[in-house]
Length: 195
Length: 272
Ligand SMILES: Cc1cc2nc3c(=O)[nH]c(=O)nc-3n(C[C@H](O)[C@H](O)[C@H](O)COP(=O)(O)OP(=O)(O)OC[C@H]3O[C@@H](n4cnc5c(N)ncnc54)[C@H](O)[C@@H]3O)c2cc1C
Ligand code: FES
Ligand code: FES
Image 1 (cartoon, chains in turn cyan, purple):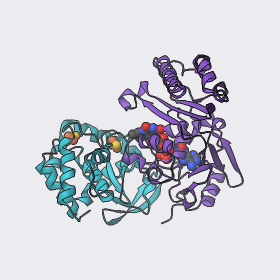
Image 2: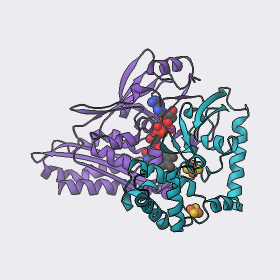
Image 3: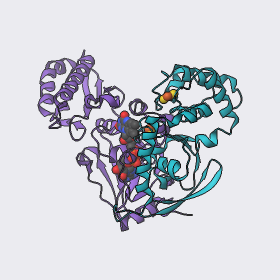
């Protein structure tokens, strides 16, 4: 997986990231926008640690995580809920962080790939993704891994079709999905008892 | 820290809404597509009273805080609703999105709203002072416009179960890349003792609001299968006349044609 993260600084990615950065600058400044803007402070548990963030509660959680809290494993591919690159677990449930307002997460537990990659379950997925060569550019992979986690924790022995449904909101431009599906199926066998 | 814009009771939420104009936030999956910051959200997810699903003998009641994920998991969810919801987006969206949000969003493309139109559902609205039930056909004033007052919340959707059995649900060209060709359809027909006892067609994404015309459906209701077959062309012609495709869209005529084809196929299949 470390290879994956290294490769995320290619040109296309940088463009996407800087677009995200611009959007956030407006998010965190008390702006010109509607007079109704009210900064709030939002406390939540992020990857096991209590954090407090202050800002506009209507900001996208994606921007808060990437730009303010520097968790760049959360990728930005579309900002419209279509690609799944920004997937996180909110109280254990898979959501797209671009579709969540910052004010929604007060009192919740948020897990990003940075938190998830310290778990035993991650180690199993890491190994099967590597063995199946399921990672090419890697941009979709943090989201894929969290979608796999959401699926396996609800259904430890999914069928191939259930795996495909489980990752249906996660687009991959590189792999054609088969290797990813196989990696998740392998993990469901090799991780017996973990999910 | 307690955020007063994330109320934990319906009374607290309605009290806030009585004093300032707020934007109800359920799953956020329509709201967050827009980039506009600074919208004064009131978050509904902490309100227990909105999370109930009630399965009565003649109606299925969905609280405004119930997610698609919960609807899919519930044993009493009517098959038609399940089928439509299962085809909405992907798990991450269905994990938070709600039927009430789909209806309140007032897009003619809402699949949940489409089902509710076909089923003649009612929308329950509450404010700090008032409570009312509005038939879904009267809930809309146009694209993106509803009769909901700024101090009101949708609290539940009441779906009559009576006519839901003989349904057909179709979603045509639903991929986002093909969005312009997207049409959705619900047909309900009940035949009792060789008589058309009930008929309701509804079309999504062709007019500013879901298209539903009980007066046209009445042309076949009460007729024997035989007589209904004879009147089918007249019935379909009435739909052709009635549908006013959204103006200025190149695809509008095409979408209308898809609707008419779906209607013809449904009627001829059911009447034999
Ligand atoms: C990638 C993607 C794919 C999608 N695919 C589909 C699809 O195939 N079919 C489809 O129909 N939809 C689709 N949607 C749209 C969306 O998911 C649904 O419309 C969803 O049901 C909206 O519910 P929500 O709870 O997220 O609404 P929100 O975004 O929270 O709210 C939507 C609107 O309703 C208002 N509102 C919400 N709750 C209440 C309430 N209790 N009282 C008053 N007003 C309220 C809000 O203020 C807002 O105006 C898609 C969205 C995305 C991002
Ligand atoms: S960036 Fe959130 S789904 Fe694409
Ligand atoms: S590996 Fe490149 S997008 Fe999936």
